[in-house]
Structure formats: C-alpha cells, structure tokens
Length: 336
Image (tube, rainbow, N blue to C red; front, side):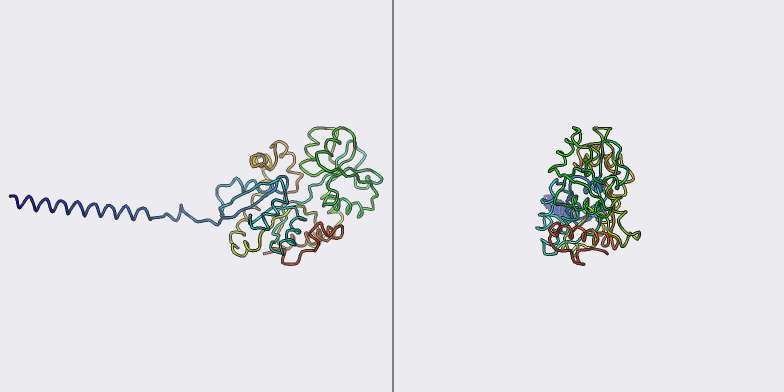
C-alpha cells in the first residue's frame, strides 16, 4: 500500500512538471507571435513646413491617420531654420520658398532636389478707392510694398517693366508695418502677400483687391504653359540621399501630398479649420478667406521644371544672390 502511494505521488509530480513545462512553452511561443496586418513597419519620414501659404497644402496629410509612411511633421515660421535642418539632415523633406530652395541646392553642394511647385504667386495689389482697373493704371502711381532685395521686389519690377509702366515703389520693412499704414489711411496702394492681404481686407471694406500678380505674370508669358515660366513662390524639396535610399516612400509622399492639396482646394472650410489646428495660420476664419487667393497647387515633372527654369532666370537677372549665386543644374529637378 505504501509502495503504491509512493509510485502515485511520483507520477503526480511528473505529470505536474510536464504540464507546467507545456504551458510555459505555449506562453513563450505566444509572446513571439506578430500579426503582419497590425504591426507593419512603415518608412519613417520627417517633413518640415512653413507657416503661411507654403504650408497650407499639407494640412489634410498632417491630419490623416492612414498614410503610407510614418510621418513626423514640423511647422516653423523661419525659412532659415528649415533650410539649416534640410542641409544638416535634420529633416528629409521640406516646403520652402523657391528662391530659398535654389539657395539650399547651392549651399549644400547640390545635395537637394526640387520635386514640385506647391504655391504660385501670393502677391496682391490692394487699393483704397477705384482708380486702378488694370496694370496700365499704375502709370505714375506710388506703390508701397515689402520685400525689398528679395523675390517680391524682383517680381514687381519684372511685371512693371514688361508692361512699360513707370511707377514709384516705396518699401517698408515688415508686412505688419505696411498693413498698419494702409489701414491708417496713410497710403492708397499697397502690395501685400497672403495672408496679410486678406487680413487687411477683413478690417477695412473700403479697401479692395485690384490685381493678382500671378495673373499679371501669366499675361507676360507665352501661350504654351509648358514653355513659359510661372510665378512659382513655394516648392517641395528633399535631400537626394533620402530620395535615393527611399524611392517608394518619397513617391508615396508626393502622391499623398498631391491628394492633400486637392482636398484643401476642394474643401476650403474644412481645410481652414485644419490650418488653424496645425498652426499654419492663427485663425480658421481668416484662412478660409485667404486660401482661394493663395494659389495652392501641385505641379511636378517637366511642367515644374520648365516653370521654375524660367522663373529662376528672372531672379538671376535681377540678383544672382537671390538664388544662391548660380542657376541650378539639371540634377536639381526631380522629374520622375
């Protein structure tokens, strides 16, 4: 009897031991199982946008939870800050003014490429009164503007010269300074960029928008848009190393960004709310008024290349330093 109890106890211990080992083995296997459908490794992509028009087109992408890449977005008010991060590898992709993009290309030893135009002209001529109906009415007038020594000056001079207009241009340092003088009634004609132009119009209904410099630029070009330059003021650039190492991720970004631009232009009210949400502009109400006048676009490929080549030629003729001293080479343009 004692022998039987002893054998039974041994068998019970062996059974307990084997059961414990089996359960531990099962638990160990379960902890190593991954579900491909829920643990997909997406490429990590860092993108920097600027406050204002060049960042507006990205807001739907920034808000999306279903993207091909794992994005990190930064929003900055300083082009120089974004420029530095692009050069030192702090970000992979950025939206920049087109002249700054060319300068980055030259300063970084040609280590970046431009892939798309994302903003055409944002410069608008405003007037208190109704004396200006066309560009010819600027003859012998005084225009107050900002941006002396930069793109706005060169664009305005180019359009005036193409139309044989003799006008006086007085420059102020800041957009806010010009807007304040305009609203105070100290000046009658002002050239302001968006969203500053819309902000002025919302505050004084005696002021009206009279000329869109993008339209005036287009009037100076040939009828074949592929051969003409365009007033391209914002663009998407990326580090060449990133493009070469992540070709699919970059192509997916461009597709998703293009879709975001389409959303913004087709859903202005909803997009304006996102513009405020992500700090691109301070007010959704102002953004809703400004977006239709910001010329948010997505132009890529050969059309992008031709448009920028002509535009850079104009800037180079005005001041080579405005684009970094040298016209970009062919390898600057990503046209795949």
